[in-house]
Image (cartoon, rainbow, N blue to C red):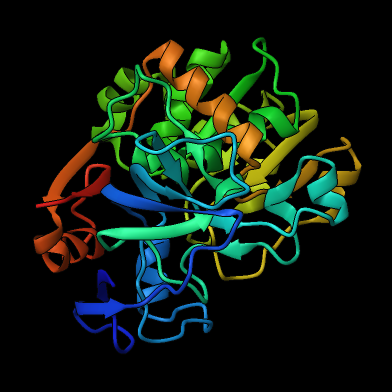
Length: 334
């Protein structure tokens, strides 16, 4: 039996919960959970904000743990190996995206906490292809957030061939944004942080920004018209999207990873006149995640984290829900 913490109804405190995962399939592994990050997506699922939660719900999709059991067809992993598990816990393996190495775009990919039980538990089970070995240089207590927040901001670097000479900007210095600043600085880009809180200027620069712009001052953005090659939005609120589009160079890209639920109000002329693009991505393929981990190890990139025991899980969730986290929250076994 797997011992977990589950939400039994939307918005309710998590309770102790046990379930039988059934027989181990030939392509699966069992993972002993050592640490698990808490992401805003976990809160969204617990609260059923996206309308697709099923209860009891065991959240947790930034899992760091140890393999304890292997299916008989799993040959590339071994017992006792330190691994990570993110948003996806399995893929079909035969669709066009899977065949092209874009497993994260698989239409039937198994999502770790959607219709399945995740990492707020002592164990979790996943398809071996979704499990990523960890470079030994990474801090096990801090690496969990890279499996969601980290790959979310790293994946665009790979997908859109961002160049080290590009001028990039990050909107929002939070759970995603503080990782984006580190990755993009290490990538070699000139990095600007957009923030509505001037007090974060020093912190943003310490994380990797070369400079900051105050989003509450429209003139600062206007003064950078046609300046940026790439702007990434990590926030989940409505902004003056057209103002940011005008800050892009011709052929510049405005990229969205923050899940704002309101429609984008964008003037087509701003796109057409300068061949600008608007795009979005979520997480990344296993190969891209492995590349990200290697890059993070080489450049000593890690999340800024706060730590709680699993027995303090409801306290940790409220800490995040109230906006007090700086910047990611990680649970560890008692």
